[in-house]
Amino acid sequence: MNPIEFQRNWIGVELKERSASQEHFLDVCRVLGHPTPAEMDPIGEFFTFERGASKHSGGDGWADVWYRGHFAWEYKGRRANLKTAYDQLNLYRESLENPPLLIVSDLNKIEIHTNFTGTVKDVRVVDLGTFAEPANLDVLRRVFTDPESLKPGRTRESVTRDAATQFSRIAIGMQERGVDPNRAAHYLVQLLFCLFAEDVQLLPNRVFSKMVAAGVRTPAQFDRYAGDLLTTMNTGGSVAYEDIPRFNGGLFNTVDVPSITSGESLITGKGRSRLPVGAGNVPCTGDGRPAPAKRALRPIPRRGASRSPRPQARRIRHPSHSQSSIAA
Image (tube, rainbow, N blue to C red):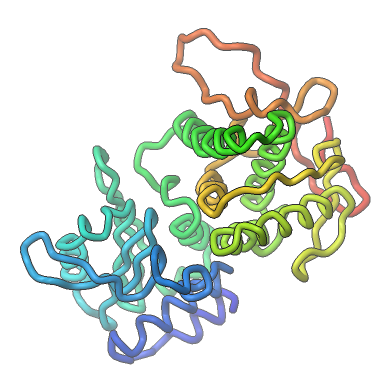
């Protein structure tokens, strides 16, 4: 389903809340290319419809949709009072593990309320008439893949630190399992590049996000899909029915995929904030080889603090199956 089809499908729909809410949410998932709750979490442990919750004022209720660490989503019928829906969601947000985003919708409008501790609340509105605008689609994608990027007052430095922290957790897990540090470092830089390439649409149709979602359910699938994708990025070709361009510069000359756990696969998705050296760049050494992960993943130090020399960053040019995609 594309965004225009979504708009056409939902203009004028007058179904009651219960009849329409799940179908509306499933269509949002389809437009964004994100797995549905049943596809991603068939057991209903972390992404599910009608998540039961206790209200802090007493009594029980439920969130229409809940995605652990991402959002709680409450639906109301068309032209309903969304303030009432938001107040209702607030009653049991603590029972829902205090998600970073609280979302309410009346089928014609989606309101995204931030719920980050120690920050001033920010509200973003996506209505049906502007649903297909690229900026609104980007916000909705981040709701599912990177809610931290919607935190008010975030700086590039804080995004970098968070991404480095997420990937350092994977590196520590690999080290504990005895994976060679150089092998792990090279692999993590490749994954970082995939996050960047998808964000700027060098990788098509959220192919990497879908791979991450499959890895949460079955880690062995992530390992197999990652190997296929990284190998194809070196040569150009097709993966999961998607045309993948060729990326040269040496980063994908060697593909050696260490096994990761389901938790590490989920961390990979959360680390998509941006490449540490800033959007639009891939970390490289002076001779064009990828920078060691211990440098590429290092958080930016506080202003005024001493720091080691920063690796050169080489700008990504438009890729093709035969054209260089990493050029000086």
